[in-house]
Each structure stands twice: as C-alpha cells, then as structure tokens.
Amino acid sequence: MSVDESTSASPETDQQPTHQCAICETSLEQSSQHLADNRETLVYSCPDCRIGAKAVVQQSGASSERCQRRFDSAQADAVTNPSVYTLAAFATDEFPDGQYHVTRIGEHTFEISLPESATQWDILRLVDRLSVGSLSAVAENRCIVVRDTRWPDTSTEPVPDGGIIQARIADGTVPDPADDPFAVADDDKPRTKRAKREEMDVSFHQKPGVYEVHSASGSYYEVDVIAETCTCPDFKQTCSDPDTPIDKCKHLRRVALEIEAGTVPRPDGKLPDK
Image (cartoon, rainbow, N blue to C red; front, side):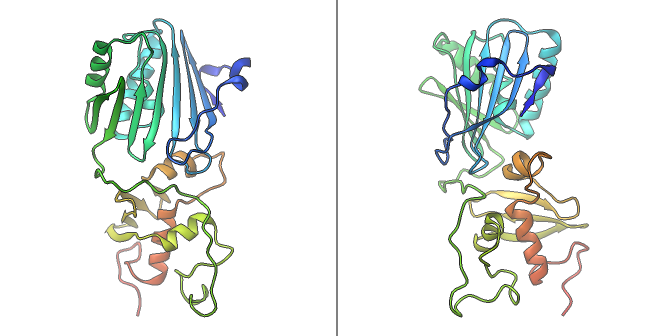
C-alpha cells in the first residue's frame, strides 16, 4: 500500500467500512492512501476481477497551492487515463465539503456520488467539469455517471480478468498443448486460459511488434510485445505494478499465442515461415 505526501496510514484505516466491487461483488481492498491539506483520499481495488475500484474522498476545506497543482495534473491525466483516483481530483474545494465516492461500475464507466449537502446546482457544475475531452458525464439520481467515449457503448458485461475457469484436456476431444498453442492445459494460469478460450481478434498494427486486440467485451487494446505493455485496465492496474507478481495480461498472452501459432505476422512484420 502506498501513502502519498510522505505520511503513514491513520489509526482509523483498519476501521474503514467494507466496500463491494460493483462488477463482481467481491470485497474491495485498500490499495493506497493520499493525504493532503484538509483532504484524505482512500483508493480501493478489487483483488478478483482487477477492474472494479472505488475512491473515497473526505474533504473539509481549501487545499494548498501545491495540492491544487497535483489535482490539475490528475484532471489532465483523466482525459486519457480515467480512473477512480484521477476522477476524484475533480471534487476540489470549489464544491461542498463532505464525502465523495468515485466507483468504477464498468470497464469504461464510473459513478460519482456527492455529499448530502450538495445541491442540484453543485451536481450540474461537476457534470460540466467532468465533460472534457473523451469523457462524457450525465447526472442520474443525484449521482454523476462518467463514460470514456473512446470505447464503444456495448451491452456486453465486462469480463473480469484472472477468474477461475474449469478447463481440462478431455479424452482426445481437445488437442494436446504440446501440439497446439491454443489447447488448454490443467496447469495453465487463469489469464492464460482466458487468452486461449476467449474470442479475440488480433491484428498486426505496426513494426516493431505492435498489435491491436479486439476483446470479447468489444473493447480495443494496443499490445506492444517488445515493450511488453498493453493499454487494458488489467495491465495498468495490476501488471504494471512492481509489487504484484503478475507480468502479462490476457491480451499480451493471446498475441504471443497467435505469433507462436503463425496466425499473425511476427514482431518484425514478416509472415510466419512455412
């Protein structure tokens, strides 16, 4: 757990209420604490689906100029990388004191609830602030729903990554993994099983080694097999964290499988050898 502003977690941290993941209903775990003048932000993440998250902001007055500069930076980052933390930066001291909840309710959708003291005018002002760049914000029942419009609006429920799949090699009905890269083995990791079984459309994008993956949820992600990076939320929230042992999301694994199977060009753009 990281703590911003070079502070230690407060004694009350362990007494925080339990928050549930809006996607898979697993209990969220506190992942970071950010302390500033008259403001505390607790960030929770889902240990199961790795998509659901929540930021709880307690605000009680004006922040310092230094903190405001950090808020401005987070707001700018929210346009290209919306998260519960970057969206929480929009709830500055220009809005009523109290507790704000920013909840990830979908892969590219967030919900923000304001304190009881917030008026309808406050809600509309925050909607206006959040309607910037690729973000679309609307007021719904005293909450604000924010979407990243770069991704298609689909009715398909987001598929939590890293879940458990009961997969076995059946009696001759499934190819042996030694012969077929897409055959599922009993000892495959959950992300590897998803990489093999989910419907994904992989296409070569550009040299060296950049591919585009159209996922089963309808989203598009850019995978760089040389840098070993992916633009999906799972990679940003989990695989890029040096404190976690997971190094590759299911999209990176799928591209590697497609290259091995010869269904897409190699990273240098050349077609597979016959």
